[in-house]
Length: 216
Ligand code: SF4
Image 1 (cartoon, protein in one colour):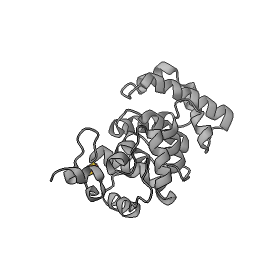
Image 2 (tube, rainbow, N blue to C red):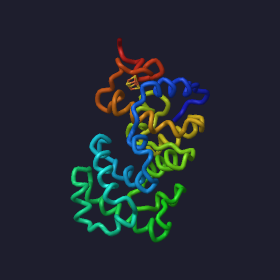
Image 3 (cartoon, rainbow, N blue to C red):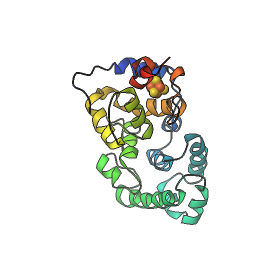
Image 4 (cartoon, rainbow, N blue to C red):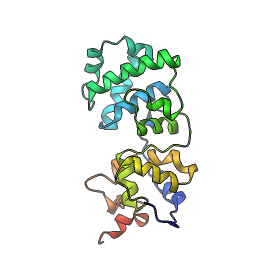
Protein backbone atom coordinates (compact mmCIF):
# COMPACT_ATOMS: atom_id res chain seq x y z
CA UNK A 1 0.00 0.00 0.00
CA UNK A 2 1.49 3.35 -1.05
CA UNK A 3 1.01 6.26 1.33
CA UNK A 4 -0.78 9.24 -0.14
CA UNK A 5 1.42 12.22 -0.76
CA UNK A 6 4.62 10.16 -0.79
CA UNK A 7 7.25 12.07 -2.74
CA UNK A 8 9.94 10.02 -4.35
CA UNK A 9 12.55 11.56 -6.63
CA UNK A 10 12.49 8.85 -9.30
CA UNK A 11 14.36 11.02 -11.78
CA UNK A 12 17.28 11.38 -9.38
CA UNK A 13 17.29 7.75 -8.27
CA UNK A 14 17.19 6.40 -11.82
CA UNK A 15 19.88 8.81 -12.99
CA UNK A 16 22.19 7.61 -10.17
CA UNK A 17 21.53 3.97 -11.08
CA UNK A 18 22.14 4.72 -14.77
CA UNK A 19 25.64 6.01 -14.01
CA UNK A 20 26.82 2.61 -12.78
CA UNK A 21 24.44 0.47 -14.80
CA UNK A 22 25.67 -2.81 -16.28
CA UNK A 23 23.54 -4.02 -19.21
CA UNK A 24 21.07 -6.79 -18.40
CA UNK A 25 20.35 -9.74 -20.68
CA UNK A 26 17.72 -7.94 -22.75
CA UNK A 27 20.07 -5.00 -23.25
CA UNK A 28 23.02 -7.23 -24.19
CA UNK A 29 20.84 -9.10 -26.69
CA UNK A 30 19.05 -6.01 -27.97
CA UNK A 31 20.00 -6.64 -31.61
CA UNK A 32 18.25 -10.01 -31.56
CA UNK A 33 14.78 -10.44 -33.07
CA UNK A 34 11.60 -9.99 -30.98
CA UNK A 35 10.99 -13.75 -31.19
CA UNK A 36 14.49 -14.51 -29.91
CA UNK A 37 14.14 -11.98 -27.08
CA UNK A 38 10.84 -13.55 -26.06
CA UNK A 39 12.41 -17.01 -25.97
CA UNK A 40 15.45 -15.72 -24.06
CA UNK A 41 13.21 -14.03 -21.47
CA UNK A 42 11.09 -17.16 -21.09
CA UNK A 43 14.26 -19.20 -20.54
CA UNK A 44 15.72 -16.70 -18.07
CA UNK A 45 13.41 -17.53 -15.15
CA UNK A 46 15.49 -19.00 -12.30
CA UNK A 47 18.65 -18.93 -14.40
CA UNK A 48 21.52 -16.48 -14.11
CA UNK A 49 22.04 -14.16 -17.10
CA UNK A 50 25.74 -15.07 -17.21
CA UNK A 51 24.82 -18.73 -17.69
CA UNK A 52 21.96 -18.14 -20.10
CA UNK A 53 23.44 -15.58 -22.50
CA UNK A 54 26.06 -17.86 -24.14
CA UNK A 55 23.50 -20.67 -24.33
CA UNK A 56 20.94 -18.59 -26.21
CA UNK A 57 23.56 -16.98 -28.43
CA UNK A 58 24.64 -20.43 -29.57
CA UNK A 59 21.05 -21.66 -29.82
CA UNK A 60 19.91 -18.77 -32.05
CA UNK A 61 22.91 -19.20 -34.29
CA UNK A 62 21.75 -22.72 -35.05
CA UNK A 63 18.01 -22.07 -34.84
CA UNK A 64 17.19 -18.43 -35.58
CA UNK A 65 13.48 -18.69 -36.47
CA UNK A 66 10.33 -20.07 -34.85
CA UNK A 67 10.06 -22.50 -37.80
CA UNK A 68 13.43 -23.96 -36.75
CA UNK A 69 12.21 -24.60 -33.20
CA UNK A 70 9.16 -26.43 -34.52
CA UNK A 71 11.48 -28.81 -36.34
CA UNK A 72 13.93 -29.55 -33.50
CA UNK A 73 13.05 -32.83 -31.79
CA UNK A 74 12.15 -32.14 -28.15
CA UNK A 75 14.97 -34.31 -26.70
CA UNK A 76 17.52 -32.37 -28.79
CA UNK A 77 16.23 -29.02 -27.52
CA UNK A 78 16.17 -30.36 -23.95
CA UNK A 79 19.76 -31.41 -24.30
CA UNK A 80 20.76 -27.94 -25.54
CA UNK A 81 18.99 -26.33 -22.57
CA UNK A 82 20.21 -28.90 -20.06
CA UNK A 83 21.95 -26.37 -17.76
CA UNK A 84 18.99 -23.97 -17.74
CA UNK A 85 16.64 -24.21 -14.73
CA UNK A 86 13.42 -26.16 -15.49
CA UNK A 87 14.79 -26.98 -18.94
CA UNK A 88 12.27 -29.73 -19.70
CA UNK A 89 9.23 -27.53 -19.14
CA UNK A 90 10.85 -24.58 -20.89
CA UNK A 91 11.85 -26.66 -23.94
CA UNK A 92 8.27 -27.86 -24.27
CA UNK A 93 6.94 -24.30 -23.98
CA UNK A 94 9.41 -22.94 -26.54
CA UNK A 95 8.29 -25.54 -29.05
CA UNK A 96 4.57 -24.94 -28.44
CA UNK A 97 5.06 -21.18 -28.50
CA UNK A 98 6.94 -21.39 -31.81
CA UNK A 99 4.13 -23.40 -33.33
CA UNK A 100 1.54 -20.81 -32.28
CA UNK A 101 3.70 -17.89 -33.44
CA UNK A 102 4.04 -19.47 -36.88
CA UNK A 103 0.43 -20.64 -37.26
CA UNK A 104 -1.41 -17.74 -35.68
CA UNK A 105 0.94 -14.77 -36.02
CA UNK A 106 2.78 -15.51 -39.29
CA UNK A 107 6.12 -15.90 -37.51
CA UNK A 108 5.96 -12.54 -35.66
CA UNK A 109 5.37 -12.30 -31.94
CA UNK A 110 2.25 -10.35 -30.94
CA UNK A 111 2.57 -6.95 -29.26
CA UNK A 112 -0.28 -6.92 -26.77
CA UNK A 113 -0.25 -8.08 -23.16
CA UNK A 114 -3.21 -10.42 -23.57
CA UNK A 115 -1.82 -12.09 -26.69
CA UNK A 116 1.65 -12.46 -25.20
CA UNK A 117 0.37 -13.98 -21.96
CA UNK A 118 -1.76 -16.43 -23.93
CA UNK A 119 1.46 -18.03 -25.23
CA UNK A 120 2.80 -21.09 -23.34
CA UNK A 121 5.25 -20.19 -20.57
CA UNK A 122 4.76 -16.42 -20.96
CA UNK A 123 3.67 -14.82 -17.69
CA UNK A 124 3.11 -11.20 -16.65
CA UNK A 125 6.78 -10.45 -16.10
CA UNK A 126 7.93 -11.83 -19.45
CA UNK A 127 5.10 -10.11 -21.33
CA UNK A 128 5.77 -6.75 -19.66
CA UNK A 129 9.54 -6.98 -20.25
CA UNK A 130 8.91 -7.68 -23.95
CA UNK A 131 6.34 -4.88 -24.26
CA UNK A 132 8.77 -2.42 -22.64
CA UNK A 133 12.09 -3.49 -24.16
CA UNK A 134 11.02 -4.71 -27.60
CA UNK A 135 7.89 -2.71 -28.41
CA UNK A 136 8.76 0.36 -26.27
CA UNK A 137 5.33 0.38 -24.68
CA UNK A 138 4.70 1.68 -21.16
CA UNK A 139 5.00 -1.50 -19.07
CA UNK A 140 6.81 -2.55 -15.92
CA UNK A 141 8.27 -6.05 -15.80
CA UNK A 142 8.32 -7.06 -12.16
CA UNK A 143 10.48 -10.05 -11.23
CA UNK A 144 11.87 -10.99 -7.83
CA UNK A 145 14.59 -8.28 -8.02
CA UNK A 146 12.14 -5.47 -8.82
CA UNK A 147 9.71 -6.76 -6.17
CA UNK A 148 12.38 -7.05 -3.45
CA UNK A 149 14.12 -3.74 -4.13
CA UNK A 150 10.89 -1.74 -4.45
CA UNK A 151 9.97 -3.00 -0.98
CA UNK A 152 13.39 -2.34 0.53
CA UNK A 153 13.43 1.17 -0.91
CA UNK A 154 10.06 1.76 0.76
CA UNK A 155 8.30 2.50 -2.52
CA UNK A 156 5.75 -0.24 -1.90
CA UNK A 157 4.72 -2.61 0.84
CA UNK A 158 3.62 -5.68 -1.04
CA UNK A 159 3.62 -9.44 -0.81
CA UNK A 160 3.84 -10.48 -4.46
CA UNK A 161 5.37 -9.26 -7.73
CA UNK A 162 1.83 -8.84 -9.14
CA UNK A 163 0.88 -6.52 -6.29
CA UNK A 164 4.17 -4.65 -6.71
CA UNK A 165 3.47 -4.13 -10.41
CA UNK A 166 0.07 -2.66 -9.59
CA UNK A 167 1.47 -0.30 -6.97
CA UNK A 168 4.44 0.77 -9.08
CA UNK A 169 2.12 1.69 -11.92
CA UNK A 170 0.31 4.06 -9.57
CA UNK A 171 3.52 5.47 -8.12
CA UNK A 172 6.16 5.71 -10.86
CA UNK A 173 5.62 8.35 -13.58
CA UNK A 174 4.93 6.54 -16.85
CA UNK A 175 7.93 8.05 -18.57
CA UNK A 176 10.19 5.94 -16.32
CA UNK A 177 8.33 2.62 -16.58
CA UNK A 178 10.55 1.11 -19.28
CA UNK A 179 13.66 1.77 -17.17
CA UNK A 180 12.44 0.11 -13.98
CA UNK A 181 13.15 -3.50 -14.88
CA UNK A 182 16.61 -3.07 -16.40
CA UNK A 183 17.89 -0.73 -13.69
CA UNK A 184 16.56 -2.67 -10.72
CA UNK A 185 17.44 -6.10 -12.09
CA UNK A 186 21.06 -5.05 -12.54
CA UNK A 187 21.08 -3.41 -9.10
CA UNK A 188 19.62 -6.59 -7.61
CA UNK A 189 22.14 -8.85 -9.31
CA UNK A 190 25.19 -6.86 -8.19
CA UNK A 191 24.34 -4.76 -5.10
CA UNK A 192 20.91 -5.23 -3.56
CA UNK A 193 21.21 -9.01 -3.48
CA UNK A 194 18.47 -11.15 -1.95
CA UNK A 195 20.17 -12.45 1.19
CA UNK A 196 22.91 -9.90 1.79
CA UNK A 197 22.27 -6.47 0.30
CA UNK A 198 25.54 -4.56 -0.01
CA UNK A 199 24.14 -1.35 1.46
CA UNK A 200 27.63 -0.02 2.28
CA UNK A 201 28.40 0.14 -1.46
CA UNK A 202 24.95 1.24 -2.60
CA UNK A 203 24.73 4.48 -4.57
CA UNK A 204 21.06 5.05 -3.69
CA UNK A 205 21.25 4.24 0.02
CA UNK A 206 20.21 7.76 1.05
CA UNK A 207 16.90 7.16 -0.80
CA UNK A 208 16.32 3.74 0.75
CA UNK A 209 14.17 3.09 3.81
CA UNK A 210 15.93 -0.21 4.58
CA UNK A 211 19.44 1.15 3.91
CA UNK A 212 18.88 4.20 6.11
CA UNK A 213 17.53 2.05 8.94
CA UNK A 214 20.83 0.20 9.30
CA UNK A 215 23.22 1.30 12.04
CA UNK A 216 26.31 2.84 10.42
S1 SF4 B 1 20.59 0.60 0.52
FE1 SF4 B 1 20.71 -1.61 0.70
S2 SF4 B 1 18.59 -2.31 0.68
FE2 SF4 B 1 18.60 -0.20 -0.08
S3 SF4 B 1 18.71 -0.39 -2.31
FE3 SF4 B 1 20.78 -0.17 -1.55
S4 SF4 B 1 21.54 -2.27 -1.26
FE4 SF4 B 1 19.30 -2.36 -1.43
